[in-house]
Length: 393
Image 1: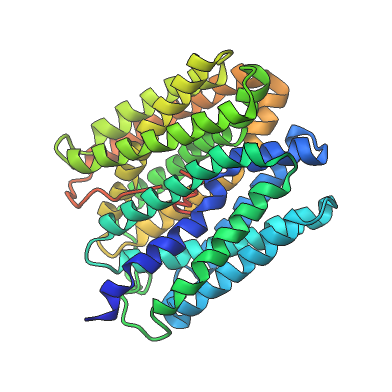
Image 2: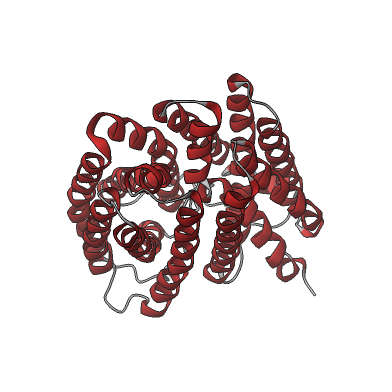
């Protein structure tokens, strides 16, 4: 039996460990604010710093996984995640917490880069990515149900991410080492095709991801302070919403390209804008839960088509890499953007601004999709969180 089939589940585990921080972002930011006495803006800035560090790892390592080997980089990433998040959990000194977030974020991004490179090289990357999504969603959902019962403080979510990284470490021995055969998406020196369409898609993707993660980064505080819910209830809503997101991924896979990409991207983004307004203005459990769950159903659907569109722009995958990197930047800027907007305009005003941004980019993104004739497979995708750092990130 070849090493590649045996590497499927280790890649899924590394995928989950890398994306977990983005999935737990609402509780991380909320606990930083309540546990350390930080303002919402300060807590959001730390969350953005964590995700920016993760995105930086992806930019740095995107074309170097083959050179260093999946096994070595995965172990490095998991070690950095364990040290960074674990160290941040053990101190209340804010500069050390920030340093832990930076180190841990770079570790998460390293693990994510390994997972992305490994799944892209598999015969069926959509299946491998979907398995990763299932794993990280189930893990995050369990933690959202568990953490509120274990006490307060900022350390618990950090410690949970560190422990998951440690638990995944043993499976990295089954990953390929340096020199494993792989196709390098960025190796070609040929000019990028469809420059205008690709640039519009990349900029639109940055704005699209920024809006999603701006809401996700403060959604925990919306539930706690505006809707008046307990942390246990908010955690339960997030857990159910993550499960609803799996329905979205399954629906995108079943729908495929039956209606092309323009309709799912355009209409889906408009629906998401409505969910953003509903979630941000929620003042009770039904409106908060309804907005968050509907949003989590449609978000992965649209994201999967956007990533598939990036792949269709260039068969060598260079636009897919650039679009994913642009999405990572949007993910990283989300928490701070959400915190700043909510501080100056309130949660409701923030939701209107983010919805307007989504509606603004919906038409250009749909136009790019309509002008691309590529009928490649729809790529499964993740929330970072997700990330991703869709899963990126």
